[in-house]
Length: 348
Ligand code: SF4
Image (tube, rainbow, N blue to C red; front, side, top):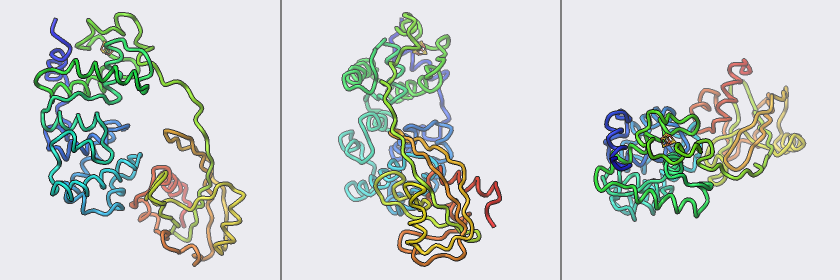
């Protein structure tokens, strides 16, 4: 029987994905795609990727953009630290490497937002360098194929998986092999209901042979996700809504959001402090936005104002027409909320 890598390479040539827009491109574009694909599905990424490379076709154009422009292109993809890190990394590449994306693994991994697996994927896919990758999908494939137990985020289990990934690496054709692992994880060895009957490594897959597919990879130990509350103050005047730019750190860093207060009790305090003349106040339905480390309960409070209060027109806040607000760098829950208000005819 052929070894693991040979079977995967053969399978990729016949059945793998060959029409992804970032295949066969330079390191800059491979890097963009790898960052966008972290925690995001291919189908979601494709239009963002295309828009991004149209506006920023190389490192220099990305470095020359403002953070605001980069985040506008990222708006809706989530995990905004990825967009900010891309921008910072482009500026470093311009400064240190004259705008040429570095070739060496050690230089690539030093850039912000790039970990061991991403650096290796760039080296393998763009430069055909012999490097092992270990992203979430690959961890799942290897944990099943080799029957490795334990949560893959655990340091020891992860180290074991890295060793396996290094051992299975073929001597050549590393770019196709890397792509084959990604394709197998995304299309065959999926999280639920893997298609083992068409899998090229089914004959010696330990999870399949020992009937342990539902147990592998071992799920993350359950822990209680903290819950937090916030109230969005949707101050509206005609078709304009008040948005504030959030500080660079923390959730939604650098994005535009409605003013927020911790609870409904502090709404009155905000209104008085900012001299807001309320014409109408409507409490909208609460919704939940889930981050990786906590759940945020959001209560939107729609407040129509008699006039735009001067106190809140300070630096970092702006009245924007709702259509302009939808074009700005806003996080997904704010976009959904504004779109819902348009659908509900809440704009005058
Ligand atoms: S046989 Fe099934 S579980 Fe094993 S690697 Fe293939 S798809 Fe995954």
